[in-house]
Image (cartoon, rainbow, N blue to C red; front, side, top):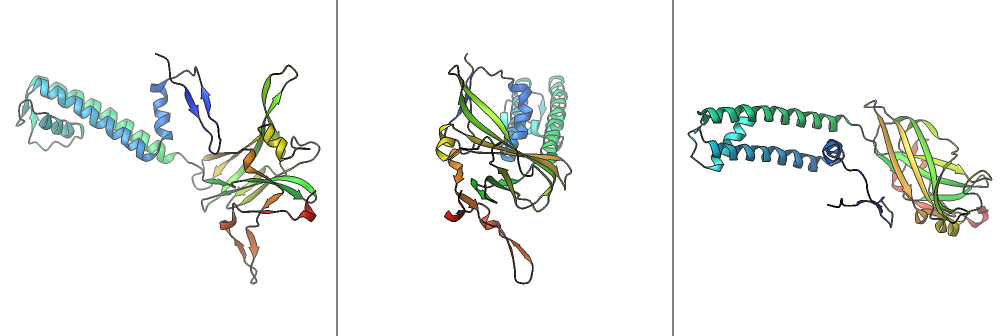
Length: 294
């Protein structure tokens, strides 16, 4: 049977990446899938597996019989007895009285022990896995800074704590055609004004100066779109609360890069000298005055 193709779509992309011929290992990757899935889906899968195991043992009890005070051949009584056995409840109203039923109880106790250990380990792993809540501005902007065209993005930590020793990397991905006529997808790292922060809190502007050394030098919006350029950013650091490494990724496509605009200031000073950080303006941009455009 032909394996189904994998399909991946980046948020905001207008295309899919179809992967053909990928080696599949569903059993070995199932644990990682449970870690990636939402809590609702994970609990649903674990609950379904537990109920399915009890249903299978209930069918076995129906087949062999030997359950005291249980109706002969009744699946409901067998299922509830299985629940009591796997859950180590043991009300005492029903109990195994034949050799075959006792053997099934031993087998079910072993299966229940394994399922409980696996579910406990899975829940602990999901709870202990630290994740970042890094927010990225909806658009990247290109506007003059000190008279030099500069690419700017805004990032922030949505949690009230900090990501310490944060490192930021931006790569430009674009389509090129070689002299042999082949299409080549090139990734080039962009040199940032500052690529490392002591701590990342609510808001930070990441800047790349577009000078003669920049891959964006001499490029405009039309060429940026024609070359199917994309901006990929990665933020890594250590969560100061859990002291575990965290990371976040984001992609801006050609339509998400605004030329001749800049992000609105989110930081201002009150008359009493206190600073105000207005996160309501986090994603807002404004046009650059024509007198400042290069």
